[in-house]
Length: 319
Image (cartoon, rainbow, N blue to C red; front, side):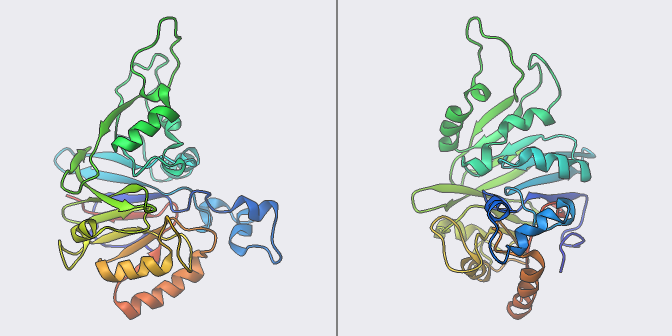
């Protein structure tokens, strides 16, 4: 049930999964430096199978929306999250999928696996030694903005101090968005509805709903979906999603800041999308074995669900 050749909402727009792994990514470094007995089968593959041929090699969760506009006869490229592994993802998947640039950036939250690649955005911007280029619009919450201003003050600072040398850095145009599904925003011609979710009971992360002809919800970091957010994406309420992209950290049990597979599948059943793709996995998940399990689950429940993989491209018709 491999998803790359799906005909769902088929057109020249596409969703491209740059990363489908947890914050520490897969392989887990500890499994390679201090291998267990027997060794972790998922992580040990990293030493023998090239990453582009290994669906168990997972970088930080990130998505590119390749949006084709018929009226303009042009593509725009919207990036959701810029994590620790962004440079590696650019080298591997921008080249394979012919992604020439990024037109807009959207951040789900300000944790390391969502923002620590921001410095490398300059690599996908036009070169200018004096930073004389159009900045890339970036959309984020108030809380994320405050945090990033501390992490990356040189990316936020607008004026040089007296005597300060010009240094080439990523040029970004910061836009604050509200943590409110009733306050949508537009990025590169697509309307996005913020989907506030709990990422631990003390923290709000954002998912996003987008697409007109093909309704897509992307929720990468979630431990609980509030009822007000669930109403926006549930088949029983606001209408059926075409694609749900949803967090799942571990195969069993529960976690205080993420869904694990039992909660993920219960949520899929409750929301009832036409199709679901899972992201955010640790090394507990084996792409082939667990997709076999999910194929059986899908046949039983009537909702196609699979683990996504890095580099996966899903054709969609968004508008």
